[in-house]
Every structure is written in structure tokens, then in C-alpha cells.
Figure 1 (cartoon, one colour):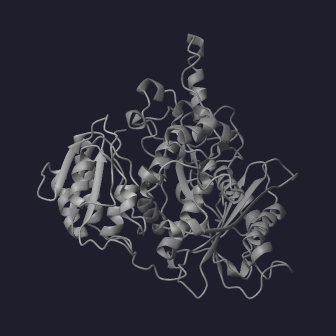
Figure 2: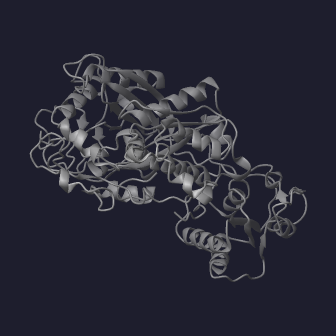
Figure 3: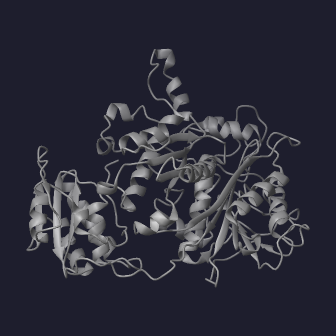
Length: 567
């Protein structure tokens, strides 16, 4: 994913762990907002704030990388382009391209704004009726088409719960057997001043331009941009495939709040019910939940209502049905860090929880000085003020994620950390002292850049369980094969990093093969026999190598940087 102030998930975690926020004024290259500015809330057709969470490069794209004509890419909604890039990155990083690509993979995309079509409409008076457009269906279908995925493919719009609802629907699709693997996520961009003006007309935005979730000075949210996605599989298959498992989805549920005192007024009973339903489907005791990522928009009315709903479910002092014998329950909201990402809010909150599980820590609530006096935390709920450990205990760590849409479209997901049943055994099969790492790119220049990116990543600290076997296997079966190719035969990771650094500098030494694949070479090389050196020579010349045949008991997937894009 990409989020305000965070072009990747490592940067996102640093932002969350610091307790800081990435809210800024509208970037100068977006739109001219000052002519519409009026500091008095309620002024018609004016905005009283221009603060939000923004990502870089929403107007940048590499059409040639995806085989799209440049003139066509200009017409495609930037949300569609961003989601496509993110899904590619997701599948490439998890080793699901190359020989493992395609198949019955579903795509479920949360999206709720068609602003690019509004921009395109400004050319209608000049007779340009087929220019820039926004088609929600195409956000998902473009991914399925270009990556050759045959599972269900559709966009989901349930307002601010869109991306979490998309994840729920993806899980249900997997359970029904409609697909074997699913990509779920969401995207949101702000490219027209009408976005701010419409929200200001509803007095939803903070006049201070700061999202103070749960704070006494909470006076509205700030809008935000972002894009994110996760790859979902049945747990048994993920284990068998050697995937890097970030968490287990134990259960999920959606409902609607029904009629309340106002269309935008949430229903705490319905919120409590959707959480209870998700816990029931998960077979999880509320007492075992250690963290809840709240919807938490930072409004004086919405925050107390949401906390009241949480108490109904989790706090023994809140109601007769509350869980008993439970420890503290930390509550937070990513919106205080990056703003309200609307269609991408759910995937942003989910990603925060995944990162907390990954790092064994709970991030602090940003912009929290004094708790809203209308919020009753009860005996169990607490709001963390600083980064603190989330220690492993005898039972797996568990968390809930809430996402509530305007008009009452509610979603909740229950997550659990993944704990292997047994320590992973060393795979049987070939015990070669040396391994062959392969890399390919669209041009010699990009191949050099690609090699340098991977070398830099391998020179740092690798995740536990990632070694030369894992890297070599993933490079062979989990990445797409482009025209310019290189293969490196080496004995350990430091040697691989050194060789790739040489390639980045244009140098090629012993044990390294380079070549350009001819477009007409379809001969299949048998990888189950022959030496690595022979397969390296044939592979870089363009023969299609059945790499999987070399790995009767494949190791786990290894993550390393993907092919550079010239956006």
C-alpha cells in the first residue's frame, strides 16, 4: 500500500510508531483552492479548510509497463491506475507472478468517488465526450484482465466501509469456492476542490485541519488519500504454498444501522451487533481481543457513540452481556495519522493492525491530548499514548477492525496472528551448495536498476526464514520473465548481493550469465535435469524453463524489491 507520508509499508510503520501525522495543505499541483476559501463554516460553495492526507505521484504512471497506450492511460481514472500498480506490487512481492500467476484469483476493490469523470466533463462544451472517465467496475476488472485472473471481479461502494466490505466479500467468495485466491483492498484520491466543498457543506471537516480522534477538541475529520490491498488464501493452502502469512482472518460481518435521528448519525447498537456477529462467526471470545482499530473519525458525536458500542461488546462493566475476566483492550484509529481515507479507510486500518502484529507493538493514538469527556472508557478500554510492546502470550494475539460508512453501512473483521503448528522443516530434495538467482527487466537500464534495488535490500536485515534457497526459488517461479535477463550462480546471500551490485554497475564476472530473450523462442527447458549453469544459459537466451520441476519440495516465498516502474 501507499499512504500519506508513506510510499511503502516500512515508512507507514515508522509514521504510526512515532505517533505523528502526515496531514498537510493541498499540494500546489492539485487544484487552486484559495479562490474558494472562506474561514466561516457554512458559507455556500466554499471550503473552510484545505488540509488533508495526500500521497505523491497520483498523476504519474508507467503505461508501457502494463501494455497500455499512453493516450489511453490519460483517460483512465488515477484510482484505477493506482490500484493496478498496488495489486501488481502485491502479487510480485508475494511471488504470485511468473509461473504462479493467473488462475482463479478474485479481485475486490473498494472505491466511492468518480471525480476524474467530473474533470473529464469540463471538456464536454468543447465536444470532447469520450475523454477522462471514472468507471468503478474497471478498477477491479483492469487488474483481472491485465494479470489474467479468472475469479470474481467487481468494485464495492459502501461509502467509508468500502474496502473492509470488499475484504469481507472476498473471504465469503473464498469460502464458497468461487475463487482459490483473492485480492481485496481500496483506493481513494482527492483531485477536485468539490471534494472539500461538499464535505465542508456538511460541516464534517475539522476547521483546525487536524484529526483529533477521541480528543476533547475533536471537531471533524480531515480527508485523506491512499491505496492498499491484501492477498487472501485459505490458511491450509497458504501454509502448503510456503507463503509469508501476516495474519489469519478469523471472521467478518457486515450490517446496516437502520433508521437513526439523522442520515449521518451512527447507531451504536448496530455497531455492537456487527462486531458481535463477526466474533461469533470467528468463534472468538471477546475477552481474548487485545486491540481494536476503531473507525474513529474524530467527531465530537461519532467518537463517543462508537466507544459506547465497543463497551457493549468488550467491557464487563458496560452491560450484562459484556465479556468477563478480560485484560485491557487498546483502541486506536489510523485516521489521526493520515486522515480519513474514505473508500480506503478500512484497508488502511487493517494494514495498521497487520503491522502491529508484525512488529509486536501497539502504536500510540496521534493528536490525543485529553480524552473527550463524553467518552466512557469503562473498566477495560484504554487509549495508548505511546508506542508499547504487544507481547506474545500463550494464546495468539487477536484484534478487531471496524469500518463504518455514511448512512450506516458497517463492517468488522477479526484478525489473529499466525503461529505455525510446528517449526518449518528444511525442505527435502536437491541439496545444492549453490543456487541460481534469476532476474529480468524490460530494458538493460532497468535491469541494472533492478539489480541494484535487490542488492540494497539483501544487504540489510532479511526476515527470519529467508535465505538463498528461498530467494532463488522465488526469483525463478514467482516473478514474470521480461526480455533482458541475468542469472547469478552463488553460494550465499552476501555473494548474491555483491554480484547484483556488479551487474548494477555494468560488470559481469564468472558465474553470471546475461542475455536477451528472442520473442520467437518457445522451446521448454527441462529443469529437473542438468546443471544450474546449463539452465542459466538457456534461460537468459529465452528458453521457457520449467523451474518448478527443480523444486519437488519448494521452500517458503521470499520478498524482495520488484521491477522498477518509470512513472
